[in-house]
Length: 204
Ligand code: MD6
Ligand code: FE
Image (cartoon, rainbow, N blue to C red; front, side, top):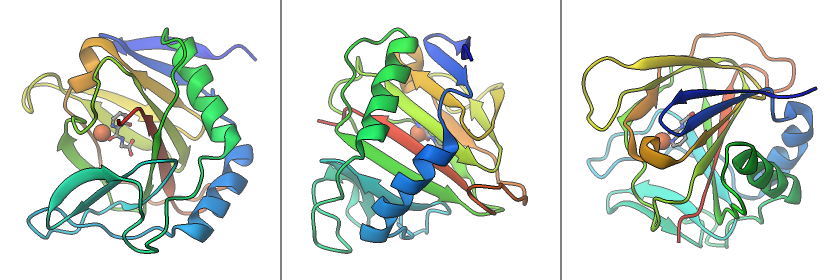
């Protein structure tokens, strides 16, 4: 099946059904067996409602010292688990479909949302090179994603993302404010009562 590609806004592309949820489920499970999902906190000590983990050379962490990428999981005190080859292939091929050649991610952040969990408006600005895209894979329960723009205000664009959808962000949209509305309860045959999101980045 040819994936359906549409441009959400300035350099942000939606690839509907580009990922195979069942194939990713097994790899995700083995990553999480090694570095389990956990609740991270903001610098101010507030719990982030999505549970998180990482795989690949660098992982995104947040705690009382702030946000950063680091090679060691603070919970296991081991390096993050390897990025499964199927994850890497998906990230590179999705980026290519969105017009970004030779994208090689060094970080994969895993977000897990239970019903009620969401993500407030934020910018992804902890990476070294903003000319590199971000590839975002949605799995499990559907979610409403919103995109604002260069500022955290004004009208937002809503995008409903379902399991297998991939969003490739580059160009001007790379630094747009965005977030996820609180998840509605439901059940997904592969991922159960949760939504998972994988974001692949070039962090360093
Ligand atoms: C999520 N995603 O979909 C949260 N950030 O659960 C993000 O915050 C995000 O999907 C940067 C680029 C793509 C994303
Ligand atoms: Fe983000």
